Image: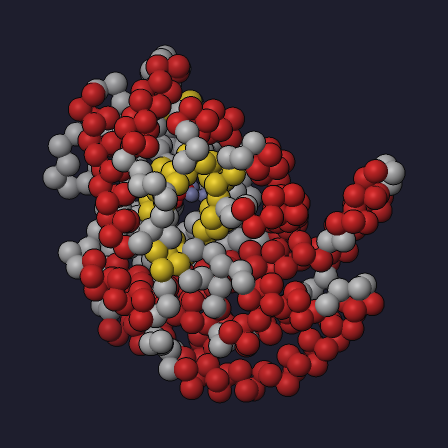
Length: 431
Ligand code: AOS
Ligand code: ZN
Ligand code: ZN
Ligand code: ZN
């Protein structure tokens, strides 16, 4: 397997930290043993964790006010893959990349496949983009795409989604995520029911083009850019559409796409109960679609989501495989560092959710022992599983402390010389 970072550098970094890690791991192992939990099993479980990287996340994002480009940003999809390979090498938790078209359309898909397979990367779900106009595009999406009044606009948007399926198919992807910004900014702008009818008609055409082993993920979002009435604003609409479309259509939950204080873990439970939970875009937020690093504002919410997923896994077993992706934007941090931190935070919640004593929890629920039920969750959440995560990385050949190791390699500084800035690089400003 080729490595972007010299693997001797990773080994050298790990050698310096291994002794302290062994001590921390032994200490945590004995705490867990007293609770009847086997640390080795948890570490093996942590090693199975995987979350997809958003290709657009390795570039610096922005807000609608400004974008402050970072040094050594990737200028094309091959450079994005190179950064993703670094993240995966140092965490061993991000083996796939989720591409976004047309941003990631390449004249040389064979080179992409070759680079990816040499570096142990695969291609996750592909994302279509009908929320902005591209150069040389015939129809504008100013007044919507899949829901537009004009048939020609809808046809163009459908054709783009079908092209995304073809591009993804050539790379080995197995799913299409559809997020549209369609909706109305003013009351009366469009017919609320008519817009959803047109959306469903368009989606039916895309659904028909899905290969047999593909899924289609419907991503809802409360607001933005349509502020008055977003067509796919909530999980209820997403669920109804997925149901109308058929078994290959599922719902995707982007954590930032809800009103503050929404009980997202309950949405997860509902969608799973009715067989429509497709996957996630993980990120965190204070207000809305802030796209901050996972676990940076509300790690307890992330844990509670994984606690629901653990409940579903217990009920449905291996059949249940939601797709995990990060979707975040970086205005003030190094994207590689932020993505590594997010992958680890999501993995942390995954491991913490395995600490929940599910038998004890159901007994407390059965007996209406509210306090101990709540404390059962809190005990798992409060347990610092960092040594498990670090040991999982060490055993998988990744870095014990990925951010420190990454900084020590000087990768960013090197890229700053190799990749001089290019105007308009790395896709959107607002994600
Ligand atoms: C938009 O708000 C969504 O989160 C989408 O997932 C979008 O395609 C992605 O963030 C890239 O802009
Ligand atoms: Zn998203
Ligand atoms: Zn988001
Ligand atoms: Zn978003």
